[in-house]
Image 1 (cartoon, rainbow, N blue to C red):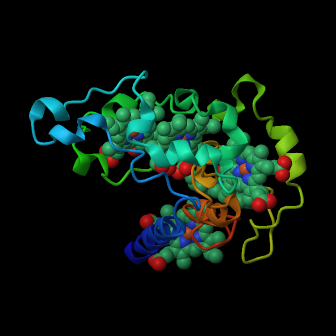
Image 2: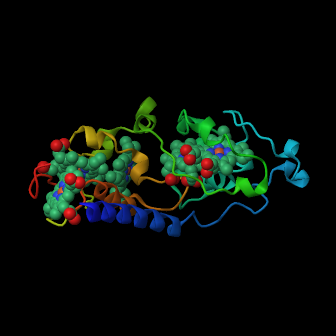
Image 3: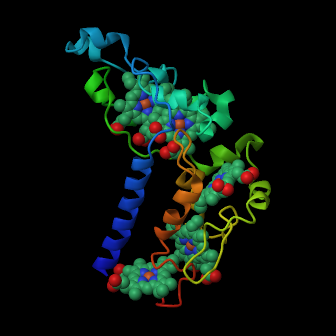
Length: 205
Ligand code: HEC
Ligand code: HEC
Ligand code: HEC
Ligand code: HEC
Ligand code: HEC
């Protein structure tokens, strides 16, 4: 049992490593893009102080994410009108906490970013995306085919509590060129550990 869990963890870790390796979209933000003005007086506690708010200038530190909206290889480019509306998607109530230890000090600023969640409802809100339409568009997509040859439309999963926990951002990156086709199978393997979509054929739980 333990080895099985470890295998799941290893698969997830591998997926993350892959995502990391595929990295950001081609042109990175200009090197100076992310340097806050306060960097000159780096070292003084006063200069390094930073309190995040919804009105903070996100680009001071997230230059690459801002730049992704102008990069045709990133899905962000299809959301170009939202370049100044980061908070429409990043409305996660934990944002303030995620930034609690952030300072304007250049070292901390480069801290590895955690994975962030954009709720599925955010993408479906205000009629931005219609699940029925998307499902129709991807009816022929076969990237989700298990080892028994069962193919599932990524936007038309059988309804269940488990499946409701899957967010669009589980498969769709926004600020990087990673494709959903790469991320999708790993999302399923988090639970369908044997790469078989049917659950109760091998054991009863
Ligand atoms: C002073 C620099 C700075 C500014 C300004 C800033 N951020 Fe961040 N942000 C960071 C750092 C550093 C992290 C990584 C925190 C960590 O790894 O714990 C982060 C993390 C995040 C994350 C990931 C959160 C998570 O749950 O892991 C998101 C999303 C994000 N920022 C969005 C924004 C948005 C939107 C704005 C503007 C409203 C903004 N940030 C302004 C430095 C900044
Ligand atoms: C259309 C929705 C949307 C908008 C608008 C948006 N983001 Fe994101 N962002 C996402 C999604 C989805 C993810 C998580 C998936 C991923 O890993 O790319 C994400 C991830 C992030 C992260 C976490 C690490 C990373 O770089 O992937 C940061 C930081 C971030 N966004 C900053 C921003 C900033 C700054 C803006 C505004 C300039 C912005 N986002 C606008 C959807 C959005
Ligand atoms: C299990 C992974 C997965 C999830 C979850 C997912 N998608 Fe997708 N999505 C895909 C794949 C795979 C494609 C096909 C991409 C391709 O053809 O390269 C796709 C394609 C799309 C497209 C383009 C469809 C077209 O017209 O060709 C849109 C828009 C989209 N997804 C939106 C969403 C939204 C919104 C959500 C959440 C409500 C979502 N997706 C959830 C995997 C996923
Ligand atoms: C959070 C865990 C979880 C994730 C992630 C998940 N599933 Fe499931 N899935 C389940 C469980 C548990 C069942 C068993 C059905 C039930 O009782 O709800 C199931 C059932 C199914 C079934 C029905 C199988 C049958 O008995 O006919 C299909 C098809 C399926 N999943 C496909 C997928 C695909 C494709 C993905 C990836 C996009 C996915 N699932 C991701 C937990 C998950
Ligand atoms: C192809 C056969 C097969 C299918 C299909 C399968 N499993 Fe398993 N599962 C196994 C085997 C074999 C083990 C024992 C793994 C080990 O010990 O390495 C296991 C172990 C587990 C465990 C660990 C049990 C424990 O007590 O810790 C869980 C939980 C589990 N499976 C859940 C699921 C769920 C949920 C599904 C459907 C999404 C599923 N399995 C589908 C073969 C399967």
